[in-house]
Image 1: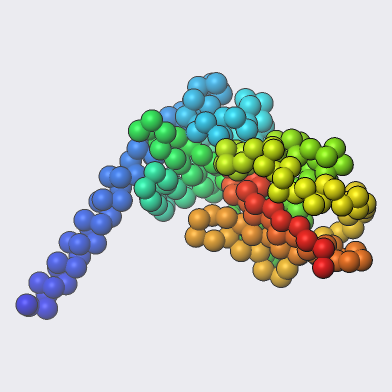
Image 2: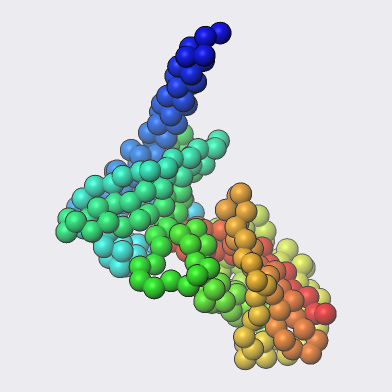
Length: 256
């Protein structure tokens, strides 16, 4: 085959692939546009109608308004998407929005299919200003990682002291809540609950994180480390970005 024909066919294939991505992600863009137009009109109730059920369950109108206000997103003018991804019933848009004052806000939106319609599962915006070296738009920085570990450990300890994991279950992601009951968590952590150990003492220690926090191909953030007690308490915590924040989706603890 003629070399130029091969090149042209390759170019055509690229254009077809790009066209396919734009076609299959157009529904997500439509949902994002409808959401931001409602935001621009200050109609937060309508904006929430474009959120996935898990997002709505974990975020009320006030929390959503606070997030939008802090990010200047309430002053939305237009959006631009530089990267679009889709896999089955999940999708993602990466880009930025421009505000009425001309400001540009980087943003990432995750979607799920609900009743054959694209709904917003999470909105992620990198923090403006000075950032730690290990922070990125898709992974929290070291100080935020430590804050996540400490909050999850606090919620866990509260339930252990109450000898009932109901409080802990209420603090985790909606995804995990659908997969496990309070009774199952009580059984899973029975040895910890019955140990009689002074678990609240951990809150006076700073967790020591392993050097590299990883986010896998499924968007799960893995944080591992230990508390330098005697014996050392090792932990592993897994998070997904749900709604407006990282939420726990896996937790283990072990004394070594």
